[in-house]
Amino acid sequence: MHNDQLVVDSLRFLSAYAVQKANSGHPGLPLGAAPMAYSLWGKYLNINPKDRDWINRDRFILSGGHGSALLYSLLHMYGFDLTIEDLKNFRQIGSKTPGHPEYGHTDGVEATTGPLGQGISMAVGMAIAETNLAARYNKDDIKLIDHYTYAICGDGDLMEGIGYEALSLAGTLGLDKLIILYDSNSITIDGGTDISFTEDINKRFEACNFQVIEVKNGNDLDAISKAIEEAKAEKNKPTLIKITTQIGYGVPKKVGKSSAHGEPLGDENILEMREFLNWNYDEFVVPEEAYEITKMQLSEKSKAYDNWKELEKEYSEKYPKEYSNLKRALNRELPEDLFNEDFFKFEKDVASRAASGDVLNRISKKVDYLMGGSADLAGSNKTTLEGIDFYSKENRLGRNMHFGVREHAMAAIGNGMALHGGVIPYVATFLIFSDYLKGAMRLSALMGVPLIYVLTHDSIGVGEDGPTHQPIEQHSMIRALPNINFFRPADAVETAYAWKIAVESKKTPTALALTRQTLPLLEGTGEGVEKGGYILSKENDELDIILMASGSEVQY
Image (cartoon, rainbow, N blue to C red; front, side, top):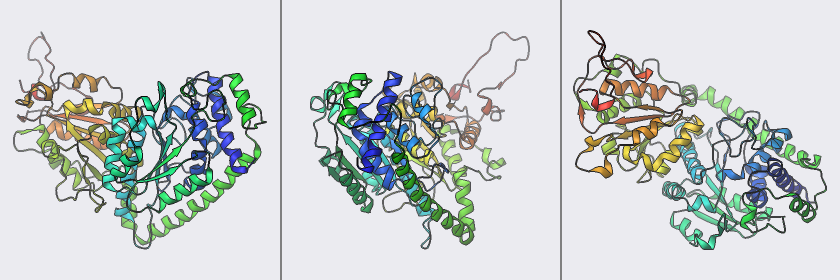
């Protein structure tokens, strides 16, 4: 057996046996996509399992999170903290190998994926953050930030609206270091893609300003490698590599069928798979030669890491100010004098959205790694940073962002930016349109990503736009989410305190519900905000009733 093929088939059998032992899971994607995953991880993915938080590592996201058995097998083979025993505990309560990849739970997992389209959208955010940091910190003689963002996606990711939204923006922004490997197996759970997905993907992505490369045989490692090299050579646009695969490859009775997608293969089919792939090793046994190959590849990757560490040392000595600022940004450190008396000071009654805009700019003047924008509502959301350029293909230094009318992708992109690190991202729209971004907001909370949501026009006070734009149930929806701080400030001072909590947060997202209408400055508001609620007016006599309110209703 050819050496590379030995590793590919090791990945296939580890995945198949993990699903079989769990009696639950998705073997089809791992069997079909193992060659593309190995080509990427073995030759091109710049990682160091001994320093998983290395800022210049390449990012890899398995957007089709249901294929997690493949990701866990890769992480095991490439030196991350996952053992064979962990693979045997796939999908079990308390294991390191849950059914879908979970950020912060499993060593080496860059993002929580599973809801389709989210992964490729977060990849776009990571690519944006990389370009911004590179523009800010790289020098002519030292490229400190210089990495790629890769994702493997499937037909489902590209059917999802969020996926189209995000990749459309990626093309507009010319994110040339974003490379999407498309596992094109033409199968859905309900049948072939001919029943629901017949568009010309190549033309769609070419229209979105992507370079499109086709690999006709998903088992051709040389062709896949050549495609990745061609993608890395492109300097003006992102790349989609369409790789034609067979779901359930190696299993004669399952290959190319929907039944390969989401159920264990069964003992008989695994026996036939062993015969088809000429596999003579026991269950969960990886041949030593396969480990030697990945160790050799890791040795090459460690050289690249060591070279970068030398660059980092040189950079820190030649550019100490920039290096210090980068470190602060990566750690989300805030200036000691940020929250001074003036930060919380307001002279007149204003809408809380206007107060938010003022506070945002107070932060931006001292925190130059605050970056974000709105889904085409910046003027209404009051989210533009004054005196700061807009981020674009031509200007990577910009910290204002035009997300376009793409609420769902905007939130997922914000998640990706936060996951990458080095920026404090915020996103904005009307509160009513939080419905459109709920999936990504839920992942913010699940991952503990401190993305800041600015949600204005928070009540029937929106007025003439009518019930389509008047949020009613959205407050309850967001409050019901575990691990998100939801603030509805009663005045400008409370708004400032809410922003303080938001930018200080490191493991919790924040949603700010803000008014369109002017609110009076109230006496005694502010310092109790971080408790989630406080007594604004105490009883003078025996207590008969407690009145509770938030936001614009507190004034009454």
